[in-house]
Length: 309
Image (cartoon, rainbow, N blue to C red):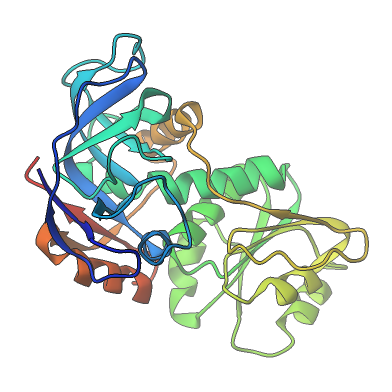
């Protein structure tokens, strides 16, 4: 089958011809891939920073959407012909940037009617990460003040939406050019992260600081913790939790596959309670360019690969 990936860890991304998946295990789903999500995390896989269980030559990708082509004998959550999306690691056969992808059935969610494969493909990792931070690590409650530090990306936008939906007052840091978009997603206030001293400004605006914060900005964890009030909570999704101080609980959130959670989030996407936008679509043979584009970012819009299935 045709795939996009690397022949060695750290190598250049190119097209590969890989063996077709073999017989499915009882808990596996074979997906004819229609679109694949692309994010910074794929660079970690390419360079060896995230071991997904595959070995070169290997397809990259940890999220995709498509149509169920076959199921293992114990699978009940989806059926042949269903449109589905998933984030599934460790990989069962190869990564998701391929014509066919084997995912664990417990990691799969049906795509709601009216949601395009491209939107569904780009959704799982950002949505799961955001929900695991907001409802899991921070346990956000109505009336709390929540900071999203570095809200300009795809995950940042979903963090804002989920925090606002929980009834929190949401303050964010971002570039001024993203302010209008983030307010439309539910942010009550936008601070320019370029300005020194923004944590002190946030503490002043809130009478002591945020009850909880998510750091989504690389190297922004120390600024973020300074904006949290004594005894609050800080979750970082960038893999760099700062030392705890002032009684603040610090949590390192690493995205985990969770089919039940993804099904709930996908239902919110289907109702319009969550949104995601696509900035660029690349064919599978331009996967290297797609990853470069995703790493540059595009004002909160995602990058996807499409596959002919």
